[in-house]
Length: 543
Image 1: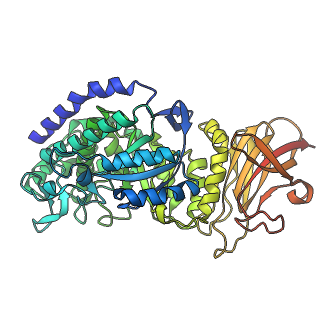
Image 2: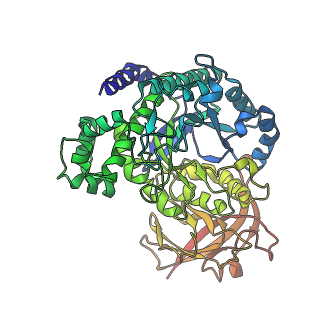
Image 3: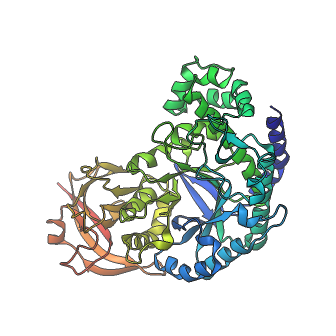
């Protein structure tokens, strides 16, 4: 296990530098507020209303100059953009910062933030963005092996010290350069390390070196973490460990059961350990918050084994303590379920990739409001149409952002999103106020799904925004029995953050003071309003 000793040396040799720089609170960083996690940028909480570029977009300077004004029109405050190892270090030891420099410059000119995606050793499970000098040298930079003892596509081995050292060096150079050009401006606010990692269709690397490591002892570091957090482990991982009677030592098969279940834990540990050390090398130069994204699980062999899927989170937390967020790329239909799975155990929700269909406009509310999410970001944002309903959603969320960040961790905010054809949700509790949401019937071919936000802003005051639902309220503090609507005011917040009145929607508009109603997106023909609404609501009580 010589490679393990080298890795630990690399980690601990850099920890001191990381800890010193991480103490600088002027750098973008994460902090907790109640039960939420906030990204702090220049001393203020920042929520990313974002979009991710197509994989090759950032490699064309003229292309990026032409499309960046459109990104601003869409209502984004943040762009997620790749930086590939092959373009950063086209020849070993020669670094070209043309593309990150151009990204930072364009983001500043359009008053937006950046999240850089490091396409290093792996992207979507394979090593297609590594430099040619790495890909051509299979002896120095060995590949993982498949069942026929052949290279598994172009997947760099997680056990290769040479690959790790080369990737870590290039990433460190990128972060060093970012500190030089952006250490005071803070245009780049987070960094993704690698992209959707894992091996597929095999569950683990089948090379001789990997076989020896798989047959060796499970690291005590992992077992100690599992033992310490036994009551909070994901049920799937706990069940695998239970098969051995919660063994405290042994091979991977001894501890986690034979076959794919143990092999996936082995893969997750090795990918996470490798990536953590790449992150440490970068944080030693410039300690921005870093995250890893996941190709989601839908059964063994249908996703790359070893990535940060939900049931492997505990392994990743043990192996990669310098990765701040494990983030799902959500292209599956069970959007709410994935959000819940990635919000457990103190992991803040961040969705760096999602489908860009019209339903993205509704999903954004759920991430930002229901889960106090750090980021929502449809993929391929540079090809989205300018009349996409996401534009209206981002516009309203942007206006409400001071109220949203103030409500983080307080239990005073909830999201609304109708997933598929689900029925009305259960009654929600915002402190001592119960909120009953009813979805409004819609025409799927004309309107996006129901989406919105409810924020308790005072004892008898709320903000309700979005489209396609109604709300009824019941105050539960001692006092008169019935809670009714006193007034509903339609308006918006101007650029200075001041409320601008537009209409009173009382009386008949509330069903005789019984409910707050917001029509479906682009459907309020009677009032001549074709956009999401912001309503200020005041309540009163009587016997």
